[in-house]
Length: 448
Image 1 (tube, one colour):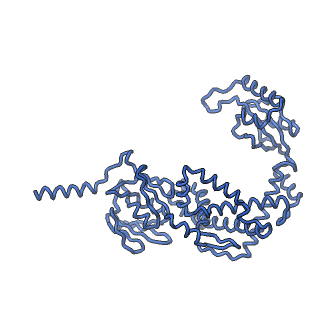
Image 2 (cartoon, one colour):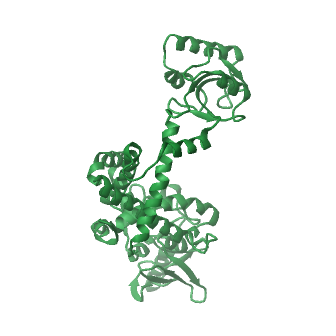
Image 3 (cartoon, rainbow, N blue to C red):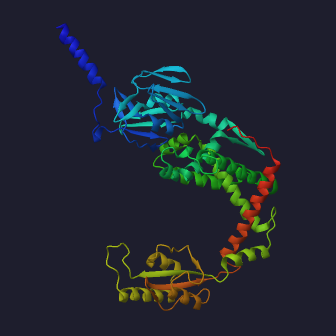
């Protein structure tokens, strides 16, 4: 009987150590800051703990990872801590402090797998389990939000920049540069750009430069126009509302903020700073209290950009298959639709409304225009546009390889939006120069 009992105990121990491949229904997902992590070996539940590939989870949490093959130990290093975890050991070291693991690191599917919760919590992150979706949710602790707002990383004029605000700017550049992951792989942040800095360092530098310049504009706006964040609250509130509504739930939005180390206060301030920038550009275009831009300067840039060009809208009735499957419309059918549209225009219907109703050129909307020079459009389209007087439309349908066009010409002169845009571009350039001059006189120190 004792032998049988001993055998059963051994079998139970062995069963507990077996890893049974998960079925599709038992798959486990891991989300970091709301983004699903993809592993070459799927996350596995072993003895009630979710195990994930060691290198992937550490790198996603911001560590540089080395592997000591002699001791079979993963060594992960960040600015705050060093974590050592050895294969088949129940002990993990966090800055030389021992931590006991419920499940040791182990080889599964040719990868060293480690417990996601233990690694994440040791790194200062909050870990939750969603039983309905069988998901591990890794986020920064919610209670750190106030600290993120209170931790001031630099001061620019009258504005104190919080860690949460910096993290918001950092995330914007992180999202822009994340395309490099496809080229450099999972270690893309530490890839050399070829200019002596890593992508991570470039993101950090761009975030700081962006903050310095935008906040300096806010300081200039306050000095010359008395503009503060209170003056752009309506714009900021609208931007926040649109942002929150872009998420499926308020909880998902909160998880996003927590995940990037930001707060609602920081995001509102971030939007507010850009609203101030836009307001300064508007006011400068009106009265030029800070910067002086002459009509001659604007006209010179306008001529450089738009000399010899035309501005039009058109309604295209296509004679090509629009989806590659539906048979193309015949010439006769397209012409009939086009000429009917011209009759409707003659009766006073809006050209823009007919664009919205009939146009089959995906590049043309009721609020957009084609601005082009010689040789940039098909010959039939270009010649018909040349013959049009400003404000007029073609009273015959213009045939091209694409179908039938009804074209309307718009002014491209000092009265046009393009002329105003040229003035705004000059203002922007001069404002950047002014900001750089102001920054050269300041002594900004970053605690980041």
